[in-house]
Image (tube, rainbow, N blue to C red):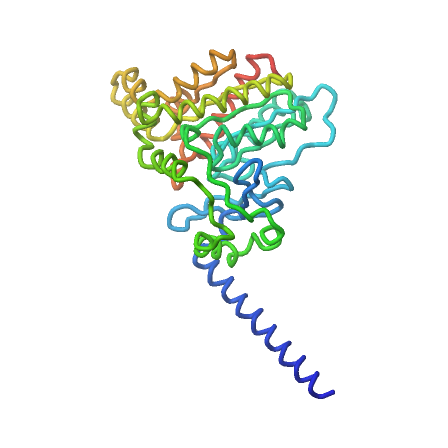
Length: 356
């Protein structure tokens, strides 16, 4: 009897010691910056997604706190879809990347949240449900997959597609085995995040299986990003523009086949807005500068026009804004003021189309 008791006692001590070491490691890794961004996984149908039902604090440069993010049961920001809507109410779904998600702002400071509040103030509470399906890192191909898998079953009345220049970028490669029970159970821990980032690429369990051609295709975009933005029809940009145009065309067809309406919204980059704001302040001619800086928006506008889709370019509102529209710390994404003016422009576009 004594021997089993000693074995159990040693086992209990070992388990407690292991738990304590894991706790110390977890706290140390959190202090080092792991487990700050929302825990994510790769959906084989969609790509990069966030784990559902989590609350995280977003940090910017030098660990400056940006905002608190609350993710719902779909791993998305904002309210989940309602089971039923009030009679006559519209369901508006916002697709996009980190600009739509609202990377640097609070839950009520994203452009879909401001749009929801603007519609309620103008047309009354319950007149429209506005859902945020934006996910950082997504491009048009990912957004098409989100529409087909998650949005289509909701039968939306209106889809607002937020386009940003890096939608020309190839989608993130899918990392296998991150949609398993292990990631569902422990994906929010710093231990698992650190293992995945530091050791994952060295193990076959998490190794991304890409062809040499695919790796070169992705690497070429990363190395030539700004050249592609400046000349999307050039030799470097043509393959990426063609892929984006194809995905965008398929998304337009899918929304139209479901008898829904699509508004295509183009967000400008700060590298476009700041020079134009400076030129305006100095009384210089903006037209030539805009043509040099913004050819991607013009390509997207052409695609929209060819497909008879309403197009909203937010470059003008961002340049015209009395308050600088980008976040002062995370300066690549809009500030609350930038999101508010985006929502106002989208609201006016939707009302102008008679879709509200």
